[in-house]
Image (tube, rainbow, N blue to C red; front, side, top):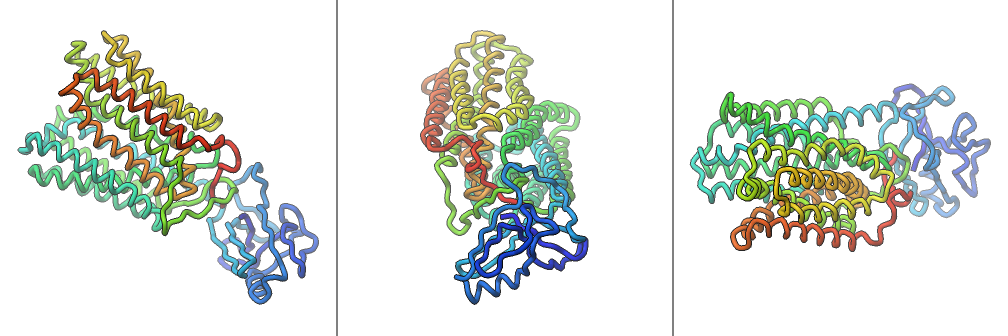
Length: 511
């Protein structure tokens, strides 16, 4: 609910009384000379007086409280002066049945948007630097582990431990962030990243590398899902897709640039230079978090109430289940493409190294360029159908990958996959934010990322099995079929969901 509290001084903490207009109805005391939107004619009644009266006689008066601003009205980010006092907008929970009235502050409008913009930019920079750092390191990590004495079995454990730690910890940490806030968890994750990156400089043995990668996976669960939950908290209603799509640019652009920068650093300074670059980027990310992300805003720039998540008993809805199935199959296909398409290009098509690099990076570049415009489109169209259309086309194009016989057709298919993948990406993120508003943003992002990491763990194992027994083309056919099954599952789970543009699906908190 939206109410107004007045303060006798511009910045004073003493809030004199509750200012209410004609929306306050009482059988005993009806305010006189009130205005629809508040102002000089508003009647004021002290909060303590209301609490006292209803405590002694809760049946005498019944309250109805409506927002001062209509759902379609434009909100401003500045406080206003009424009768010589500063007006603050607060979220209120009023209960006439038991006589309890509580005021839940969602913060002042003054400076609120600027705080959100600063947090958004800070998280964008943090996500870019962390993704860039590991994009620099990851292509060379197997070689580094092998030089440290790791066998093939050790290398498998190193990568599996990282993925399993992320998969298991993401839902738990996300749920915990809904209880305790997000900023401290992000800072803890960045400290974990920094510590692990410095330990890599010591050239540890295989067992130590397995332990470090496990800790790194826990750090990833502290940073990536919680950052997305943070962005979901401050994303404006009816602009979730654009907000999340723009934020994802930080990840995909870093993934595109990381391997190239890593190759240059590796040539110039070796493994020490690679891991030192990671440590520097982690340190800069930590400093950025301390400077930009000071508090965890839990309110959004609209005026519609968001139900309080059931934190003591976590619950999830069918849409979140469908999104989890969709992201599992999508991450499965992405990992199979990254692992086995180089083998297909080298063994079957005999492509040059430059041609292989262009094909591997083309889809990521296209995705990065189209994220923001597709996010804006997803805010205007039915997001469920965008996910279904983009996911279906991506699966069908994956089926066409082994049919390509030369560089040109394979490049065209890869670019088309990138285009249709980005059709579903912002739309699915916006649906995820809507689920987070209902069940807890951290829990929703944690479950989503846990499902994604589960697909990352399964894909190499299943792909290796198919490669040994059925050949490399079977891998892409299987990925296409699995992608279509994921879309069917998502469609079934989200069948009752209405168009997300309808007001009743725009569930959010208010400030």
